[in-house]
Image (tube, rainbow, N blue to C red):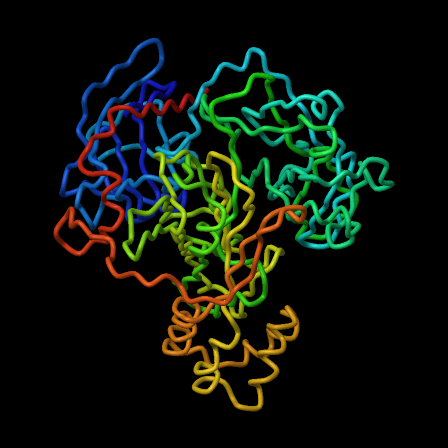
Length: 548
């Protein structure tokens, strides 16, 4: 690892739990640990090893290494695959006199990164063209969270001949950047909207014409969330569009905005840019969403520092739609709203739990990007479990599943090949599963009202009922257990024009052979992820912080 800074003084650099100094694992030429906003104390266990230090032409460069897992559980942060990392840095123009007299920094800052899962594919794009799918001066509603949908016609040259998307990225209007939270592009499979009067006209998604809204059940071709970067497909993979004048005629651009201060007259023309080529690649890609359906049946109690929601992808869905030799996952995008703090995508085959497909133990809702993961094969009959962890300790009200920033979601957007018809594989807890919890923790006169409010997808009616409950530790733990172990409604979505989708009641996976937990440190540290990091050192990562 190397840090380069335009200074001839000292350099500070480290890993932070939240972008601040407190609790950070810091290097200042030496190995330090920050207890608070003061001079860090010297770490007893010196785990950062200085390899080289140079000063030349006004720049200072430090080269050093550190194990992914140092087993210094008091002062060091483990570095795991998929985790969001907050890097903090600071520097001064003057060298310190010694390790006890270090002047206060002149400059400090932070940057959020994913050290291992960046989309570093670099396929040749010299022959690529691009297509912008953008809103046309949309006036963002002064209404908190809003969703805007726009149907956009595919150009005739793409409709007549198959082209292959090899890269995409968000195009954000600078003046409205802080209000754009996520962007989805749906490819309208077999839905011909030629001549429809609402083409290229933006609507509140709930008011989108019903026939256009059908496209939102079609495959997602591109997805972006706040903090994300460009998505680049591996060189052997692409997403096909067009090729038959009547199969692919339109996209639907779905934008999520946040305007918490109800500011009027914010104009936005953001959207997505697709880069495409004419030459096919070895594999055609697709995307599937996995997790818990974004509906009010998802309930997170107030004032709980760690509450887990479980979403399931059933074996019936994978058995029905995956090819005999399975599909290969190469990327994933985790998605929650504000209080999501960790996610894990688990993989079950014939009752045996395999290593997680992806995990982020330090999820940051302001930094949600696609992660390039080691290739994982998913076979027909495999089951997936998405665990989403939330911290509602600062909320005095119940949080429900929904589309607004105040509500929550639990999803993973998985990119894979070869393409299949399935677009989503998800679940919600069957309301009948809550019977025992109701009997034990809810006044009898509220039983029917709670069930009806959830069945009617009515969080406005449900919130005062749930807020009035005495959310003891036993109460929220039993409620969480029902969501984990109780009967689910398993959803398997395919595009409207493709048969094979279904909704069926079923139980979560029965795990007969749990994942073997290898103790790296031999001290009870959560070991289930340790297959990711062993004791390899960080030689290959180059971080260059150049401050002018």
